[in-house]
Length: 561
Image 1 (tube, one colour):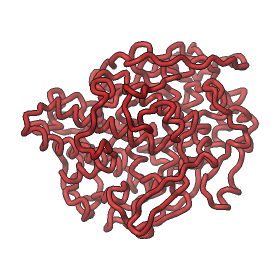
Image 2: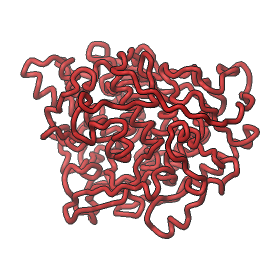
Image 3: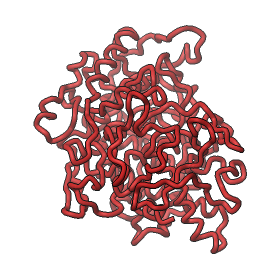
Image 4: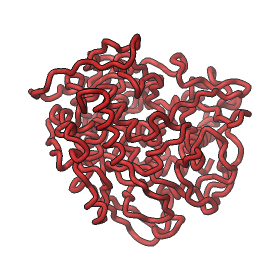
């Protein structure tokens, strides 16, 4: 997830009567974060024998970061480090050797899966919507248009052009006064053209679009139009706001109060549904014990051992460049959209399929029960709830050949992730595990391949050192996070289908990846003085039932609007 389907941000601005703000405009997006609610517990002290830093190998001359420190001197800032004292991982004596090693590893991580319109062994027990909700969250938190895959990047020079808050600035932009063209005169979101094709979603609407060709979405973050699924998820949040507006405006609630209600429901889902769905229970309980105990942070306080913001919230590179990219492995090669629109590939070589930044066909309304467990569906039917692929060290074929509108030079998402982690000088997964004081995976436990229960897939898994001795006790952090999810770490997940109860062994984020993700989420929300955890820790969602409000409930409320 730092973009489950990563793309370049849209460059062309829409030519609407009033132009949508550029996601690369700091004045539009950056707001100061509030004070941290409670100082974090100190990290355990560990003594690690590490090699001295290697010489800097910059590309070209006169670039920012030419004399950069190999380890960031900052714990915080818009981007920062959780483990700034750890040495960066290198994978060769020269740039060329490192590039070749990462290329070989990336190639091994990409499969050749054709789109499927039914159950298959690669499915987890997680509904497919969580892949794209994770992407949506990423777009709410981060945007780095400035770092490069071709040259060393100075981690201290990076700017996050998103507020490090769960504040839905990707939805609201700069608000009703500064971005009035998103709203009607009362404060409801303007919606786009009607969409058809899904009987279960008769009120479906596209996003508002420009008159250009291709027609670009006029929204708070152009990246939320980069594929059909996240585009319509953005539209669901518009409709959720409008549904809350319809309930509360007649009672005298102001736009700001309604906006807060929407944000708090979203934050509740992030903490109480998204994290439990993706992170191993014991790992999450160590950070946010109140979630498992169903209490609150006053009775069971969060424990932040590694996310240590001294003043303002910051975005850890270990999170945005490595751990949160777990969602890339969850992407299916294709998705059915409705009973009338069968499986569409996520990408094709010609840039069609579900690729966004354009107006998609008007009969492509999504039946959200195909993506979320909003109602039980027959598990063997083509109208079943599609499930995300397993979090593992394998990506589907289309992510190995991205269209130019999504990513180029290189066009392999696996290689882009590996190069970015190296360019931004991330430590190895093993060094992070040692710093955390958790058991370190042995090289033979870091397997590349599909983590299914199929004997053929199990036999095809290979240790990472197969692809180069440079990876011995030196695994890229992103790959290490994925490798942690393999058996016996899988969790039994139960789903209620119309025809039966499904129990699926499901990989979830482990001691390193899960801890980085959970602490980053908790740290950012606690540092935000406007979050529900800071302002009203005993708050419960008004649209929940007995304190339960999940992503499926938010979707159901939006669909009724």
